[in-house]
Amino acid sequence: MRIEIIEKRENPLLNRKEIQVKILYEGRTPDFLKIKEEIVKKLKLNNNLTVLNSIETEFGKKSSNCYLKVYKDEESMKVEPEHRLKKNFEEEKPKEEETIDEDEKKGATDEEKRDEMTEEQNKKGSEDKEVETKKKSEDDKNE
Image 1 (cartoon, rainbow, N blue to C red):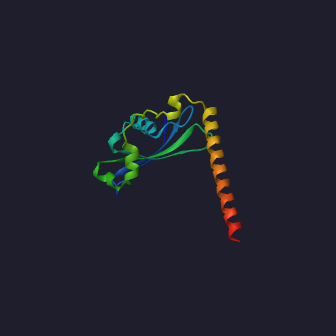
Image 2: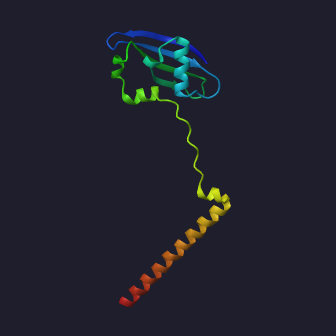
C-alpha cells in the first residue's frame, strides 16, 4: 500500500492536525482499521491520538482519499462524535462460530427442505379452503 500526502494543515482552535492522504493499493479496498494502521505506521503518528474520519473510493479505481485528524492530547479528542471514536478504536472481535441449523445437523439437503416447505404450504392452503367452504355453507344456511 502506497501513501501520498495531499494536504496537511494545523487547526489550533481544535488542537489538532488535519491530514488528507491518497492511498494506492492492489485488489479490493482494505478494511477501515487496516488503512488506519498503515497510515499511522508510515507517517509515524500516535495511533491513540489519530482518528480516521473518512475513506472515499471512486468506483473501479485502486486508490482512495482519506481524511485523518491527529490530536495533541486525549482531552482534545472529546469533540469527536462517539460513533467515530468507537469505529477507530474498536478491537478486532474474534469471529463467532457460525451456528449450524438444526436441519443441517440432521443432514437434510436443500431439496428435502424445499419439499418440507411445499408440504407445509399445501397443508395451509387446504386448511384455508376448508375454512372458506364452511363460511360459505353457513352463509347459505343463514339466507
